[in-house]
Length: 124
Image (tube, rainbow, N blue to C red; front, side, top):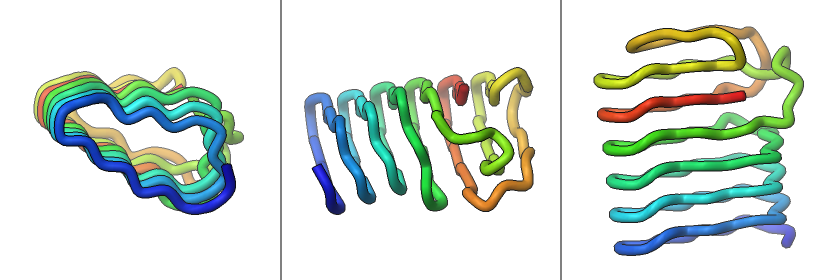
């Protein structure tokens, strides 16, 4: 699928795969699963995990989760990315770097912003 997608769920999982374009997805109560996406991501959930694999971020992207984990596998060259990640309660892992509350790293052109209130974040 080529183009921009806006997906919203009040109660239930959002699943998107095979997209080339921007994805804006929100879920009040349910996970967000994205696979094989090339583009910009803006993913938000109140309660539920954010998971993704085979993701190529081409523009600044945001991951936000109030209660649940963020776990994504990025296909980008790590040198092309920079990270600004925060959590109130949880751990953060970016490739092999680990932190408890906050991490800012990298100098690439694509900014990855991640925020969790209660949940871990892992980007690999």
